[in-house]
Amino acid sequence: MQLSPLHQDFVLHFGEMGSRWGINRTVGQIYALLFLSSEPLNADQIVEGLGFSRSNVSMGLKELQAWRLVRLKHLPGDRRDYFTTPDDLWEIVRTLIDERKKREIDPTLTKLRELQMAAPGYPDETYANNRIAELTSLIELLTGWYDDMNSLETDRLVQLLALGSRVQKFIATTEKIVPLGRSRKEKEKDA
Image (tube, rainbow, N blue to C red; front, side, top):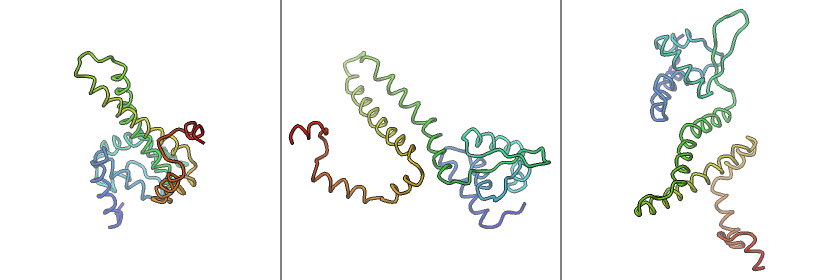
């Protein structure tokens, strides 16, 4: 399998970016090749296309499966395993974000909550506990927002993202009518 210059550039770039995203170069290149392929590929085709060892390809495919970024396919009359990526780009993005959240954010949030539950043992821990509480609140706010966005239908999410900075302008406009920072009940009492 000979890769076109377009394929080569994309695959090489994805490999380099992979190391910045927390996966190794080989895994990034395997994913890029599968992503651009119109047909599912088997491990031998990936070895041929990228020039990697069979064991590196097998390990890379297992890692991509653990991330839920590739799908296993079987073709009629062929006993080999074939691999492909989801067709829906939004499914890929949602999977990536969900996996990163599970692997990075959730364990950190669990640890922060554990630390908050422990009573300060030393006088100088009060400041640290307050900072941990602030960080916990921020991460909970962000993960709550993520959960809200993740529950939206893709079409609605695209519409929301397309609004861009217009959302900020809307908030600024409504803030003149109902200032932020007060609960609805407080606002109703004043009315």
